[in-house]
Image (cartoon, rainbow, N blue to C red; front, side, top):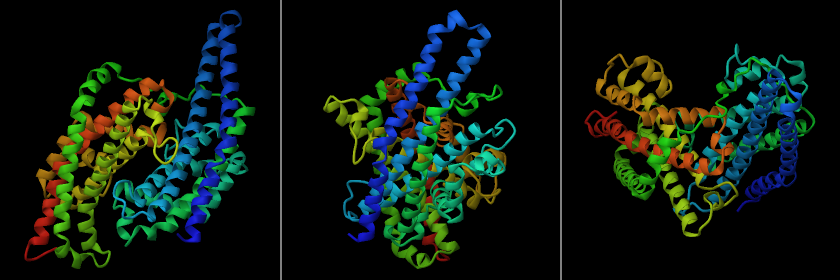
Length: 473
C-alpha cells in the first residue's frame, strides 16, 4: 500500500475522530432545546394565551426541524468519510467479490456529500432569511442568492464553500454524482478504480470542510434560538411526514416470511444471466470500446443501468442478510453493522434506492435515444412531457408509461426526493416505526427492480441486435 493511500485513510480517521468532541456538542444543544420545550409545556396552561401557545409550538417545531437538518448533515458527512476510507481500502482487495467495490463506496460518498451541501444551504437559507416562497429550491440558486447577503458572506460557511468552488472540489463531486445518478456512470470512463483517486481526494476535501460547517452550526445552536417566520410552511420541507401504518403492517409480515427473499433472489439470477449475455458480446463490442466516442457511449448507456440495478439488488440482499443476522443473535436491527457505526441494514437500503432511481433516469436517456423525442431529462420529466407521443419506438415508450403509472414507482420517486433533497424521516421517528418504514422501503425497492428488468432487457436486445447485425453500430 502506498504512503499516499495510507495518508488518505489516516486523514479520514482523523476527521471521524472529531465526533468524540462534536457528539457532546450535539447532546448539549439538544438538552438546551428539550429543557426549554419542557419548561414551556409545564407552564403553558398558567402563563400563556392560546395564541401565544400556538406561536410557541410553531417555534419549537421549527427549532426541532433545523436541529434535525443539522443532525442529518452530520450523519451523512460521517458516512461519506467512512466511504472515502472504504474506497481506498477496497482498492487493495480487488479480488474479494464478497463485498462491495471501491467505486460503490465512492459513488455513495459523492451522493452523500452533495446531499449534505444541499441540506447545509437549505439550513443557511432558513437562518439567513432566504425566501423559499418566492425563490428556487435548488441549492445552487440558494447559494447564488445568499452570496448577496453580507452576514452570510462573512460567515465561515461561505468561506469554506467559496474555497471549494474556486478549487473545483465541489463541482468535481457534483459532476461525479450527476453522472452516476442521471447520466452515464463516471467510473465507466476510466480504465480502473485506481484512476478515481483524484475524485476521492476531492471528496475528502469536501467532508473536511463539512465537519467545520457542522462545528460552526452546532455551536450556534447552543447560543441562539432561530425565530421562525410565520410564512414558512414546514410541510413543504417534508417535515413530520406521517406513516401509513395500516398499509405497512398488513404488507410487511407476509413479505418478510418469504416473498421478499424470493423476489430478490429471482432478480439477482435474472440480472446475472443478463450480465453473462453482456460478457458474451465482449469480443464483438471490443472494437467500439477502444475510445470514448458516440459508439462506445451508445453501448455503455445500455449496459450501465443493468450493472447499477445489479448493485442495487446486491445492496438489498446484503441488507436482508444483516436483518437476518440481527434476528439470529437477538439484537436490534441497528446494532448489526459492518466496517463502521451506522453502516447497518438501512445504509444498504438507502444505497439501493439511490441506484434504482438512477436507473430510471438512465432509462430516460435511452428513451430519448430510441424514440427521438425531446431533450435528455429525468425519467419523471420525460414521461410527463412526451407520454402522449409515439416517436420512433412506441413500444418502449408504452412500456415506460406503464411503469410510470405504478404505485411502486410513484412511492420510490417521492422517497428519493425526500431522502436526497429534504430529510430522511426514519432517522427522527420512534425506532420501531423507523424499522417498519425501512422494511417497507426495502420491499418497494425490490418491486421496482422487478418492474425495471423487462424494460432494460428490451433495450439491451436492441443493442444486441445492432452489434450482431452485418452493419454493426
